[in-house]
Image (cartoon, rainbow, N blue to C red; front, side, top):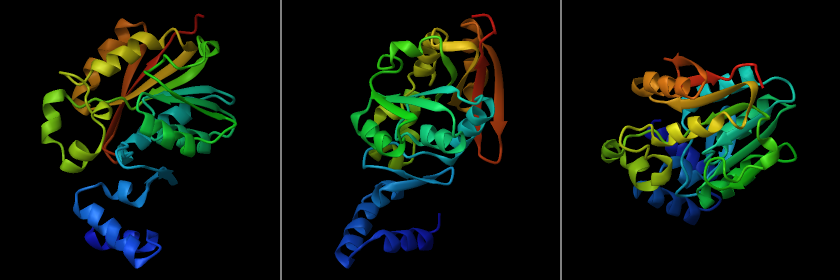
Length: 243
């Protein structure tokens, strides 16, 4: 985004000259523009954000597109590592009959998600991965999505300061090879998935084949989907149709 575009957004959002000055100061201090504005644009929605909450990336629209394509009418969709709830909110907006359950371990992210993911078809929980989900969902999830952290620990130091300094480490750090959290999700997903259900995880292009192999180890038939336009990559794992 050009500086002129950022300036226009800040001017449009500020209610007073003093507020504009404070917002410009926070931006000059390095806060991501979206955290300064209090919202991010994602899939045509305005997603509420707080300082310190992961900013949804455009590449993650690929995750949404595949979830929407695979969700049957009336589907149960679960979004783990939901962050601000951007993916869950976008799926709800595009699929009027689904029910979405979203969760995150970060309390600040959960507060945002509870603003962005509306009831009565949206439900947001605080906790680690599957732990906070209602037990009644076990074996009933048609589509399970995750934009889990996938940056290798040693690579975080090379990230832009906006992310490295102002987004939570828990939303970035995927462990030594970037697959630590994704492995945990794949290992636990099958017991929550309905027969024929799908697990969709965003990852890096370089890690996609390794993640696909992890899916296969847990009985999921994997395929990799890449979008050059969005610069996004997801791996989709499908459970067989046997309950």
